Amino acid sequence: MQTVVPECKKVSRQNIRICRADLWHNGQMRRLPTLKVIALTLMPILFLTACAQSSANSQTEITQADVTSISIDPVEKLTDVRIVTLANGAAELIAAMGYLDNLVGRDIASSTTELKDVPIVTSGHQVIPETIIALQPTLVIIDDATGPDSAITKLESSGIRIVKISQSWNLTDLMIKIDQIGTALGAPKSATLLRKVLSESISGNLDVGGPADKKLKVAFLYLRGTSSIYLVGGPGSGADYLIKATGATDIGAQKLDKPFTPLTAETMAKLNPDLILVMIAGLESVGGVTGLVELPGIAQTAAGKNRQVVAVDDSLLLSFGPRTPSLISRLAAAFGVIAIA
Image 1 (tube, rainbow, N blue to C red):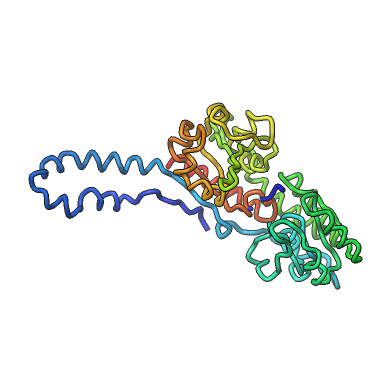
Image 2: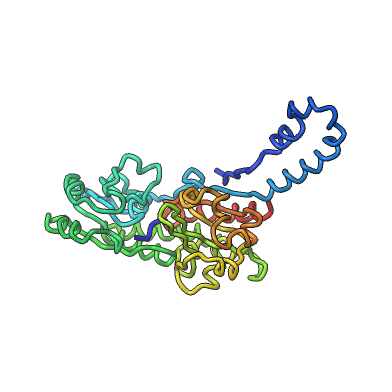
């Protein structure tokens, strides 16, 4: 199943004061007077080399704490409506519409702080019907990724109203999804208002930047090292929309023909990105930036040579919801900062 997700936190790979301490203030070095002249001659060179290399190791993380969520005051009032969301990110949109109090269960992809008291009702991404039925919902919202089918059938047979909505992988999809949720809740005016606020917030970030040949080239990699899954994002990956919105170029979307393509040395040579975008857990699964550059072809790219990596929280990057405008702003800032690091 496809899921996903304050200032960006710059993670320094090496502190300049540590460089100096390691190279200049080592006790053993002070106790070797016969090497003093050699040390004094060579150490400035070693110091400059080591610290110059560390400056190229540049990684930025964007976590859930770094973004904010848009919300509105509801137009319609909902009474006696108990909602369980199984569709990815639907609970965040319902809360953003002002109906947090009507949520009695949520999908695992909805992870904003305001939802912390609403129980997650899935095991991984699988539905457990008994858990949902016990919450006595009057409405359950699902999407194409909700399963298994037998669980949905059991929910329907219990008399619970089930509404299927679309998944969202770009702004157009998101607006359709909001309308569908508004219709399901009987709150079309609230949905229209949220659409308006979100659209206005996002529009300021779209189509910015210079000429196409001068834009930062970004490649999105989907990594799950524990499962040996290494994919390069292309058109329709979801990340392509976010990258374009920052004013950068998704080089995978430009040169590949599928949403996801297996990562190979040949593919990375073809793309040669300036920067690599990943999910935080995905990056950790391959051993961090050090492990990333050991994957086929990565070390030979401009991004690999300069360790230019932006890592975003897994549940945030492809969630497409009320946090998307803030995420686009953070990505734009991260791309700009890390590109000149």
